[in-house]
Figure 1 (spheres, rainbow, N blue to C red):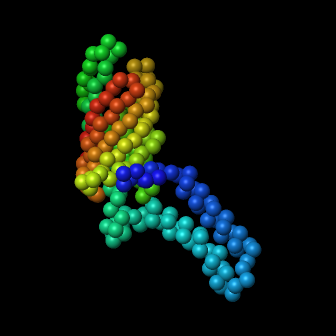
Figure 2: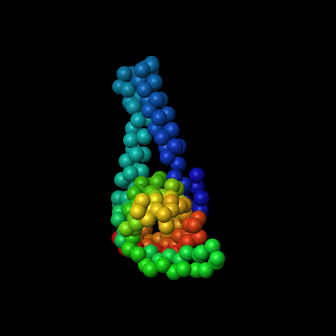
Figure 3: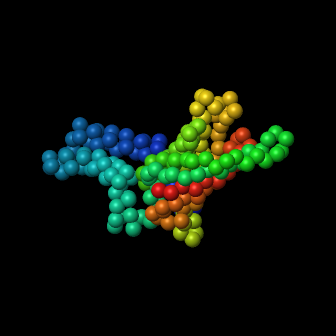
Length: 196
């Protein structure tokens, strides 16, 4: 599904394509064709070859020049990022409380079609449930994602499990720094920055 230059992650669609292509190849191989033996074998193997080529492109080839220059719709985010996070929380009475900045690590796993983000602090771990990369009109990128935060058991009484969303701004295809902001369902919000 395409949206403003970004592709939403659809692992179910990709798995279905792999399965259908694999079943097609197996059926052709078992039924055989009334073609010369070598051509029949090649036709039976063709869907599997296409799937293998797509898997290689999705996981590795899209990051390598000159293919990367031709694609130019995905920044390289994979890796570990270190930074700080600042937050504000609104009490039920409406008062804003500023929290001290805390150190964070962002672990990003990325293929051409998928992106997952894990944000770690000394007290909790946030895992993305869905992430989408959008290429903006001026050539930079915005990453939108939803996440679930799971604080450690020791702090869960004052910091319960919660859901949130975030946006990360990416200024180039090979960024060295990231800036972002987030908001949660427990009336907190804030921003963060990180360096590769």
